[in-house]
Length: 113
Image 1 (cartoon, rainbow, N blue to C red):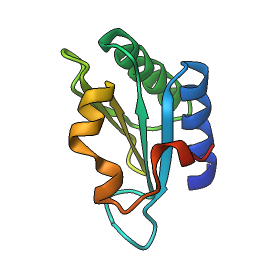
Image 2: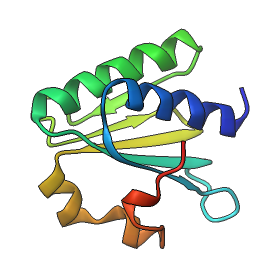
Image 3: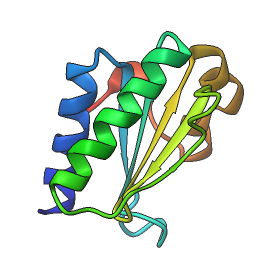
Image 4: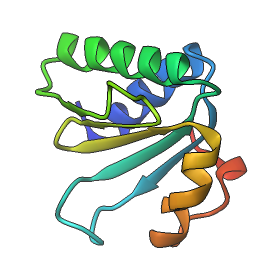
């Protein structure tokens, strides 16, 4: 699976889970930690946790090793699949950390799918 195919897989699952403000940021040539990061918002801890669980299932089904952090509280859940890192936030937590600004990305409404 190419890095772009992986982004499509992840953003497709997030769309299915009704994630809001999905933003994919291409890190190729900018960082060695991953090819892409994806940032998305869920309206509650339950939605954030469900989105993370569905992503883990989808990624494992496609033979990716996955590390998961932040599930007990589900304010901010990090899903690390090596080539892609997904950050799932509740709205106020996303606003506080503002990862988009850190990576010089467009506003969340300019999401790519």
